[in-house]
Every structure is written in C-alpha cells, then in structure tokens.
Length: 296
Image (cartoon, rainbow, N blue to C red):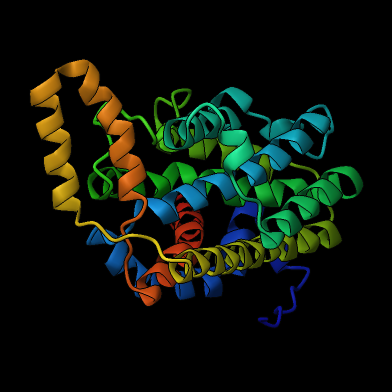
C-alpha cells in the first residue's frame, strides 16, 4: 500500500478536485501503464468477465446510491446530488437482465471483496458522510469519461447490439454535454465546506476507493479461474456468429431473437488465457476511474 504524502496547510487550500487529482496521481499512472489498456483496445475481453464485472458493479452502486439517498439533504453531500444525471443502479439492472435473464438476481455472484467494498460504502454513508463525495466523484466521473471509450470497445468485442442492449451502464441519458457537466460537478464539489482535516480524509478515502476496486477484481479473477478449472467448453466466436446467422435465415426473426440470447450464453464459455483475464478484470474499474479523473 502506498505511503501518503503529507499535506501542507498551503496545499490544502487548493480546490478539492485539484487535490484529488494530485493525491491519486500515482495510482492513476499505475493504471494507465498496465498491459490492460492495449489488450482491451484490441478487443481482448470475453463475455464471462464482462458479466462478472457488471454484477459486482451492481452491488457497489446499489450501496453507494442507498447512502447517497440517505445523505441527499446533508450539507456535506447535497450540492453534488445529481440522481437523474449520474445514478447507475437502474441501468445496471437493465444490463443484468439482458445478460442473465429475468431471474438475474438469483444468479449473480457477490464475492467477498465486493461485499467488503459495499460494507465500506455503508460505513461511510452512515458514520462519515463527509467522505461520501470521494466515492461518488471517483466512480461517477470515471464512468462518465473513461467509460465511454470502453463502451465502444466492449460493444465491438462482445458483438453487442448497436441499439445499446447490455451497455446501459455506460449511457448517461441525463447528461447532454459531458464536459460542461463535469465542470459543474467539479465547481459544486469545490464549494463544499470542509476544513483541512476533512479534506485530508477525503483524499485518503479516494485512494482507498481505488484499492477496494482492485481487490474486487482480484476476487473476480479467482471466480474466472475456478470456472476454467471446472471445465468451460471452448467454442470459436466465428462459429457462434455463423450459427446465429443460419438460424435467423432458416427460422425467421423470432428465432433469430431467441438465438441472440443463446449466442450470449455460448459466447460466455469462450475463454482467453488466465493472464489476459486477470489483466482485464483488474484493469476494468481502475481504467474507468483513472481516465475519468484526469479527463476533467
């Protein structure tokens, strides 16, 4: 775990957004210099990892947004309360139903590391609400910025519909201009009243959010590895595409639509090397967070 640098009274007089950028600079550089970025841009991501990531994000955002609602009128958070523009829980529910079907709540896993993140969010919201802004800023601004790049890559790599099914998480219908909205959010956040000690705690909490995210995806890697050990069948993507097209031509649009869900289930069994899976799982959240923070 990295050692925190001391913050002088002069430096703590800076805007909170600038302080967050500086405090998380090291972990951001670690994220952008991982092999993950190159691998993801090449489309080296499987449906299995993507579904696991989406499930964990659901639990994380459910907890985050529960605590945001608890503190929406609290002066330490109220100025940055933008549910219509930012909240992701409902979007993640749509994605999970698309990937898992109507019984998705009974099927998605919640690894111990994800539960640890969830518990931290509840602890912050209930006992230290002044720190909630660190988690909201780190997550939402990251998804709004860096997530847009990952959306296009995931759509192409996973052959998801051009109409956006399975990618609702990345779609911010309430934000018409991302750049202007980020400026608004940053100005609201900088206007939050907090003393130097509180600012320091917020910076430490932001770094903790990065670490919690990394732990989540290390745990997801174990789930993926266990799936491989249990023997997932391997089927070339090209063959999956061919079967789907053939079924469409033979049986018409209705069968083709049903075949789409079958193809997603079959593609879920397509495996990549353990190293690539680990890089993708670990890097996904760090990348959206890091890109978002530094795209402001």
